[in-house]
Image (cartoon, rainbow, N blue to C red; front, side, top):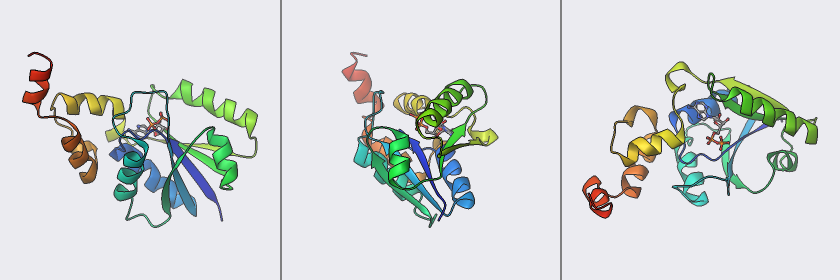
Length: 169
Ligand code: ADP
């Protein structure tokens, strides 16, 4: 069975991530979405929440499984017998970092290939961090996230009025 790992922070999963997972699922027999437990980032959702949100959003794709992982992606890929690491590539913003990471990963695990899928045009500008910023400011982002993430963001964030009050505004 050809297994691929799709790693990331997914804080939270967006329609851009989901599109990559769906397309990877049409290329590989099994896709394991690997949610990085402690990325060097300020997280809005804890590991369990990030896993549950992706699981729920991808529940209609039968060959996608979502788990958390700790440590190096290549070690996780080896552990689950993955042939490939899948990454999404947004025009401009991701290329250099992804290239660098792919070469570093190849240096450690030459048997695991990195497969980059080009982002669909409608999700090119979409990142979880920008999404959270817009959500905090109560902007419009309904068309960029799955339904369950929309609800989770609304629950997570205090009402705008409470937020402004807490900021002294
Ligand atoms: P990381 O912390 O690894 O960058 P992310 O959750 O931000 O984790 O992204 C995981 C993967 O999904 C990366 O390969 C990233 O380039 C890709 N990705 C992020 N946003 C999008 C998007 N809008 N469309 C497609 N792929 C995306």
